[in-house]
Figure 1 (cartoon, rainbow, N blue to C red):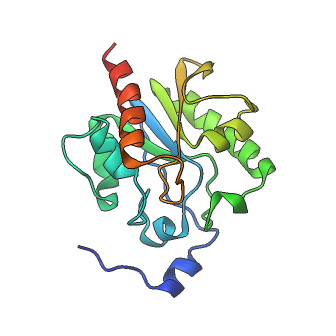
Figure 2 (cartoon, one colour):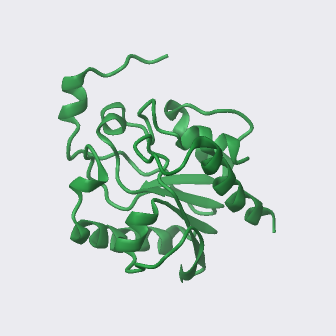
Length: 182
């Protein structure tokens, strides 16, 4: 177990970044809105203990065990990558402007065109709607693509997202997982 960062370390992570975990040939590139302060402080994706990404990935059938944020680089070996719509770490999505989400989409599109994952899974329907100019988008497979990459929208796994319980996330993540077998 790694040492938990103190409050000052977490707050000092504002506006820093967490490196992408990406390579060619991925089945899914999972895309958060932006790193949270805790994730930036520890340097790993979906790092806050209350974040439900890693449990949802496991419950959805992407992994055979529950991974820790400190094992995020191992995720690449399974054919999955991690990135964000916007790079800047904040205490929450509300600190990002619509313009930042839209400019983040342009950087994201360039990454997707370069690495060509089979699917891009955007982990926030709200961020997806704003960044991709799709105000009426719903969860699941989207009608637009980036080159050969299909886009799938999922709810944010943040512990702050009370609209979706762990069982809801597991079901929605498993729907994407099932499409990989088709």
